[in-house]
Image 1 (cartoon, rainbow, N blue to C red):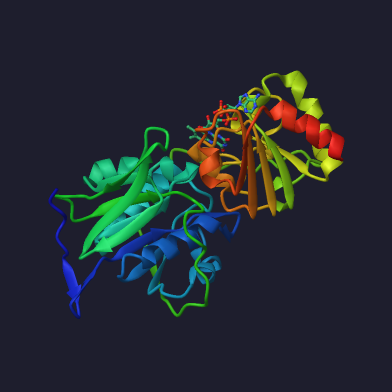
Image 2 (cartoon, helix red, strand yellow):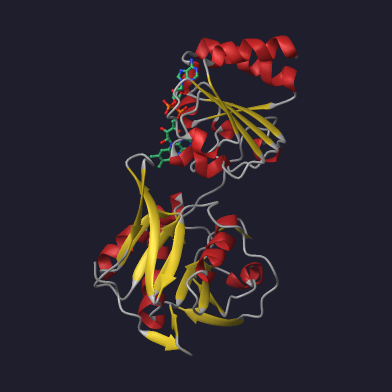
Length: 327
Ligand SMILES: Cc1cc2nc3c(=O)[nH]c(=O)nc-3n(C[C@H](O)[C@H](O)[C@H](O)COP(=O)(O)OP(=O)(O)OC[C@H]3O[C@@H](n4cnc5c(N)ncnc54)[C@H](O)[C@@H]3O)c2cc1C
């Protein structure tokens, strides 16, 4: 397959310039932004980070990390994320700055505008990318197919500009104070068709699974709602906090504050005990950086075993019974 040609060569090295689109929520830059900066470093070129907000100056210092060359403070008329505002603002930045690569998170926010922008501008595109490289000026991105059974390296022949959405938690957060210059940019964005109204807080009194040291996490393998109580009791006995995969929330058995994963919470407990969870990528995105992962699944091919440090191919109810006797 032909590769995209390197357009800029610096001291014999092929450079790929990168524009990182920062994500933020309630005046805090989201962790994925710092991960995008780490990923950008792998492309060996100048790194620009765009912060799009009503008052970007409150956020620029949070993205001023080692290796960032420039921060673009992009002023728009609303602070919280809206699809059409981001699409218009990033389009203007791409046209004005002409980066070789635009990086966004593979997140609910970016899914709302990044694929549409790539299609509109005819950019090379890949989503859910978890590995990146610069091979002589050609960008190579890796992502999974067929339910994570196959990993493929993607090239972007015929495209001198690409947009990649990167899987959260696949790179460490960028550390170290940077010395980036800050430029204020105004872009013309027609008023948004949507407007953020309010944040609704999760019910007071529920636990925060994101700060727990020990999570006992159950998935669809528990079968029935009636079985949930025994795992709530087991978690309490073991000194663990109960968390779940998405089908348990979708079924309405527990509130979504207990959900681990891409559309739930990212957790990093010391111990993550997964019972009857298959290990879909969206689940792994929220827990694979846990300290020690222990998985119990009756299917020896379950993808959760790819990230587990310890695993048992067993019936989860048998394991639960043995644990119950121990505590
Ligand atoms: C945009 C998007 C966002 C998503 N976000 C999330 C998210 O944030 N979090 C999330 O979890 N999912 C998310 N999902 C859903 C995800 O794709 C999977 O469908 C989900 O994670 C599957 O949950 P599960 O592993 O509990 O169920 P299943 O995939 O049905 O797996 C159940 C597992 O239990 C095992 N099992 C069954 N009986 C037993 C037994 N008796 N003993 C031992 N093992 C048993 C089976 O072998 C199987 O591996 C998202 C999907 C999309 C499209």
